[in-house]
Length: 378
Image 1 (cartoon, rainbow, N blue to C red):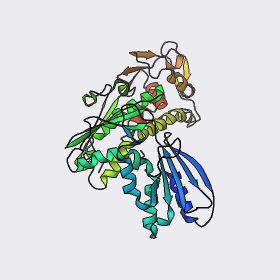
Image 2: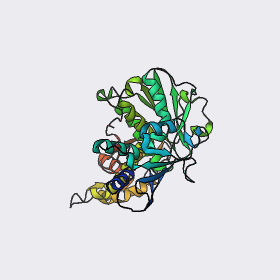
Image 3: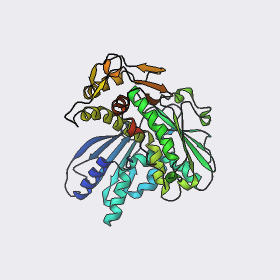
Image 4: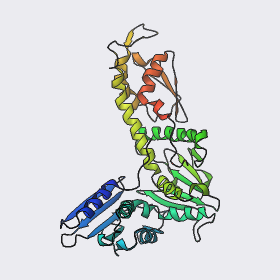
């Protein structure tokens, strides 16, 4: 399992190259997209090599979120506190962007370690801006208070036209993610992944991690949320954050992990899907001999290695269908069938070889049962 890193690698590399070659008058004009929703525009003029103009475009906010001057609440204060004299916020920002900063490299610290740490923070602009309101709420949780003038249900943008929700209290903050996926296969895999994520949290080694829950319908905490925000084809995932999860350095890790939770799930869903596609053909190459099975009624011998190769196409047509059972009518599949219950796959069939070696290999079910490393474990 992977944990996504806060600094943009592309942005950090550009910053380091610019600082190392600040005496060279090289014009720079480049664009970058992060997580398919945040856009950067970097500009350096030949006449002023010590300055860099950095513009940032945020995901389009849904109606339930509140922006001030095109930014989440607390973002301006967070930028000023994080970057100090090195960054000047330009008002208005560049057309098509939510924030434009003018970076002055002449004001970087002389110490190389301090300089690098500050450039890391600049490359983490996404976390600073989008994570600002979440950080405000969690900082108050650390002191066991609730931020003043804040709603009982707070909607924060994290994807284009999508939000997640906070329910702040003095002893905990409940965070609810409506999980949405455009592809039906991704939806099924994500549902299984999230349910296994909850199971993994129950292990003794993750007792310090926040409690988490998955439900197919909106939890009670979302009562009063607009109806358009409650459409989620992969269910709703809930974290309960307490004060011990945001103490000291844990605050930064918790903010980033929550902010990128959907991207974290999506990454592993795509990885599981890729494994499903790539694994089946390899299985048939492990042995020079054909694995064979005999059909119960016809007695016809079937090449199971060939059936593995054909299986993904057959299976993809079945994903997402909510029926009691699906019967495979082709010769090599007639003795195996899948029963779907609450989107959890269970496998049955008289021939154990077909059931385990073929079907489970194809959808890589075992990979979905691997224990997740909780991002918030102490």
